[in-house]
Amino acid sequence: MLLQTRPVFRVLALSQRRFQSTAPTARIIYEGGLSKAAKVMKLASVASLVGASAAIPFFFLGDSDVPQAARTILAATTLGMTGSSTAIVAWALKPYVTAIRTLDDAIGPQTPLLVDTMTLLAQRRRRLVFPEQLAPATLPLTSWMVREPSDELAAKAQEILSLVNGRTGKVAVARAGDVFYAHTQGELGTEMQQIIAASPCQHTQKAD
Image 1 (spheres, rainbow, N blue to C red):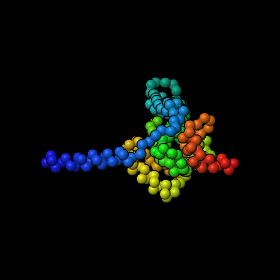
Image 2 (tube, rainbow, N blue to C red):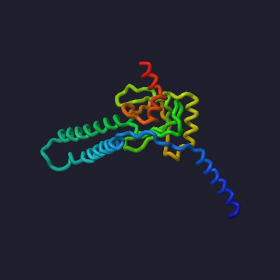
Image 3 (cartoon, one colour):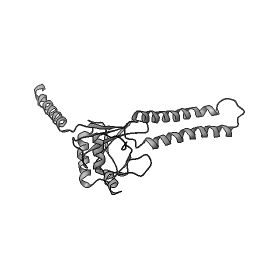
Image 4 (cartoon, one colour):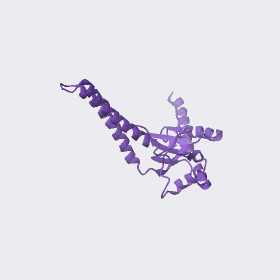
């Protein structure tokens, strides 16, 4: 029985080696300069909301001459202020790009990019996008808006996902309308300049 199972293990080992040899390796080419500060702000805003929510019952405990209506107003005001500040921080930092990785050595319009942002709880959210999809965004605190991919790019994205998922963390395809904010002004690295040159942003600037 042991002799019969050995070929099976050999086949599995060979399959794993082939996958590792064919799967692309992500190379980091950009890191957001305010990534750590953005993470701290997100966590602090959520913590303040949790703390305020936990303190709400204390507004209604104990003997006091404060009317019930006044206690309710104070509790609602406290919760509303902390909730609104958390919502503003979440909205402002949702598109902030903490890192960009590439799967190719050369960067062109159809080079696959893995773009990292953060969730509400400051967890990494990684999406696959191509430079030719990165159209200029007009919303505040945004640099790019993702355009609808061509059929060719959509098929290519699904093929890449089958290779990278599990090796570079959970990856999803960026959807049309997703927005990103990256530092695209000032002194930029060579790869970041190439991304901008390969995106529709460059063509828009030339037209202006």
